[in-house]
Image (tube, rainbow, N blue to C red; front, side, top):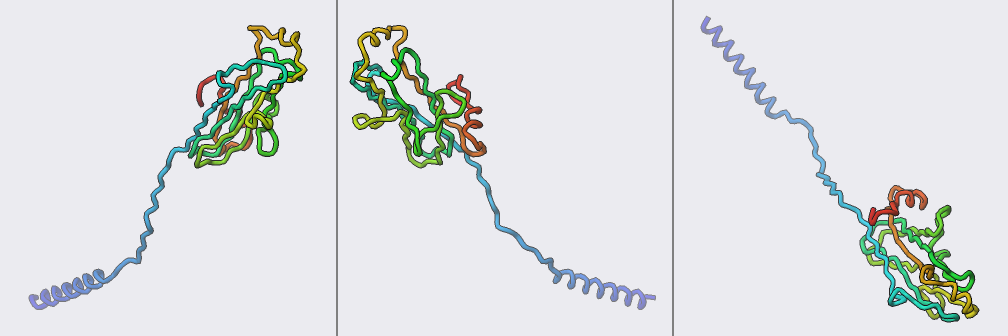
Length: 198
């Protein structure tokens, strides 16, 4: 019996030794990818509305003397692509055909937003440097914007302009991200014109 137990024990040891050596040499086929890390940064749009002329923001209406007026919207460096808007509000007495201005439109200019009086827009790509967009059409003497005063403006017409109804132009600029917004009308719908920022 001892010999049989010994032989059985020896056989079990041999089987165990074979199993350990086979399992030790057995390997799985494995592979590992490179690590990819995604960092999400914040996009930003910054704009500025400035004007240097007229210097005191007031100018006298004198027949035949044009008034230099150069409002411009600057899309600041490193801003994302955007829909850029400018709202031009006219109040007071502008003598028809004698005290006039126009917004710079055309191929490279502003476009009137259909159905919204006094609102103009343009599409602006992402910028790496400050990029300026003048609002008003200019002339030879004042290329960055002008209010034209006709030399046919009469004293009687000037007298209709009183302290309470002096002509005023007010400009407000807005920018809305271009990403995910397909039309200027959709972008304008996102503008809250009653608050200081959006």
